[in-house]
Length: 422
Image 1 (cartoon, helix red, strand yellow):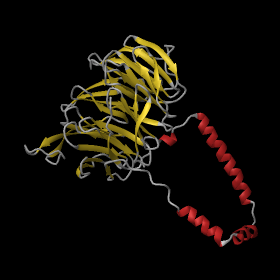
Image 2 (cartoon, rainbow, N blue to C red):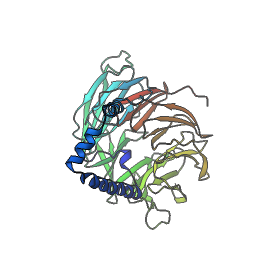
Image 3 (spheres, rainbow, N blue to C red):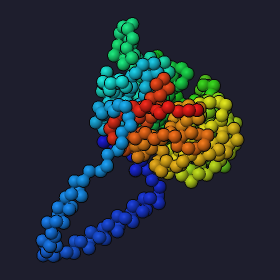
Image 4 (cartoon, rainbow, N blue to C red):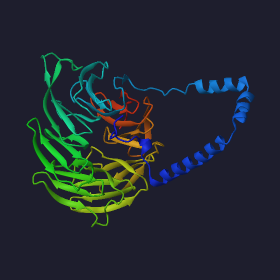
């Protein structure tokens, strides 16, 4: 395992949890000291006094298997030998791409699970794999900041839904230093990546022409494109949020220490509405800030780490969802800047969320489950199981109502979403 591999959910905690762990360790050490005071004769006597029945019972307890996790997936991809962190589905055919801690990227068929291509150029944990908007390019990136761009080229005119008639040619690569995240611009062939130093890179592909937005010297945690595609909002580990003009590479608006609504807990996530000049940001202290391009307009304290924010795809209903470390899923009104409903608690930490229709929200959890919610009522409408550990990434294909997820359990799984009535 690499030293800079993303932390597991179980490793993320606040100071109070660390103090509790320290108390437990001290208590454990005291018990160990008491046990060490036993003489050798006393130890032999204790061992000899144990009956064969006790020994057999202990063996049975150790050997008894745990209840298996129900597997609702329609296909499991088992090729990764270490945790898988990122996934993407081709927009037009049945290709899937996954990357993980084994430093590999696999391209495979979601119908059969057959490996079609394997990329081994990466020398560190692969945390980002993404097809661009029309599926002509596949970008992959690792924690060290090495980015590779492959172009898909069709070998023949015959239709092949599994993607076997495609070949990949590497057309571009770049090394940016320690990388925090990577994504494609949703409307054009521009690749975007944030760094651990706070810089944000924009490359026009495949030429590789580059713009760099300067950072504050701390990690750029997340970023998102504005509704008009001309601005970019970014959150940083010092609590700062900046709105950038992409053409001029200048800051339009900034929420920093001089603003009373600044994130004091370090900003963990930011997301921009796809239909209006409005965005939301959340932090590790549980604070959510509602902002327009002119500045922040409101803030709410939720009391728990905000892990993810996602706007509904519908411009008419004005819904935005947040998910927290304690499993709270909330739906907000993006027009009135207030709460609309709280979903049935997941009871598990929320690691990522996706809207798959105007009113249907899907979340994945630290326990490896996938939950679907009706955002109008907050009612849970389906549950999909199969993973045994935390799910790190999720993507959705609306053509066949297919979900693809990757997990700490080394697997990628394909699920079919139950039929839903809107």
